[in-house]
Image (cartoon, rainbow, N blue to C red; front, side, top):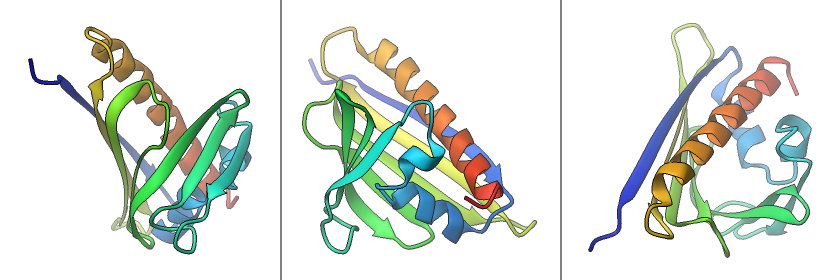
Amino acid sequence: MPDRRYSFEVHGVSTAAPSVLFRLETDGSRWSTWARPLVWQSRWAERGDDGRVGAVREVGLWPVLARERTLEYEPDRRHVYTFDGLAPVRDYRAEVSFTPNAQGGTDLRWTGSFSERFPGSGPVALVVLRTVIRFLAAQLVKAADNGR
């Protein structure tokens, strides 16, 4: 039986420029400044190529730290990452896009897709991941709008 795939999409709108949101979202060391209360600790586990492709950030609260490896990095436009190491799902791929809008701000689009790790776990993982990303997107917009 082929793996069941799941996906989600979250949107947000910020008054800040795409570069502001991009800088906040891609800097693994700064998540703890804007993503609380979900993320209390954040750091670079690996810097990769100037903190870009290949970089691994660790975010969360010890002992539960998510490791996320950057796969694609287009400054001020797009960031693609996956889970690195042990993860609750398989083949996770997330993309965060930052598009300038007519009001001078940014339209944020955060998508993710994955396969379930255990049969039947996909629907629960989908609800959890979509809820977490929805929260993170709202916190990211709030931080960018407040000039953090």
